[in-house]
Image (cartoon, rainbow, N blue to C red; front, side):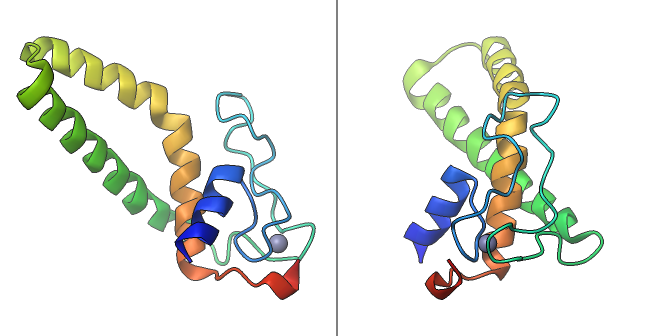
Length: 123
Ligand SMILES: [Zn+2]
């Protein structure tokens, strides 16, 4: 279960069949195309955007990922690094901007995996 979700998220694969790509480019830092998705899976015909506004829910996943990042970096800074608040805020701002394309894609893939189970007979 977790292995299947990780596979789909890490390799940009269809949550149903694990064969077709979801995003058109595998490089999240190709800034012109990182958000472009296929409408359906070329392998199993899974429709990625199930209904209009389906991916609004991925924003909550994105929020959760960012809160996790804030907590981890805050705890690391408070208990280990002990840098000044200004330095921490600059670090946080830079990393949040840097991770935005990655967070966008991971959030959508996680969101899709919440509603679509891997089915090896579809591959
Ligand atoms: Zn598929």
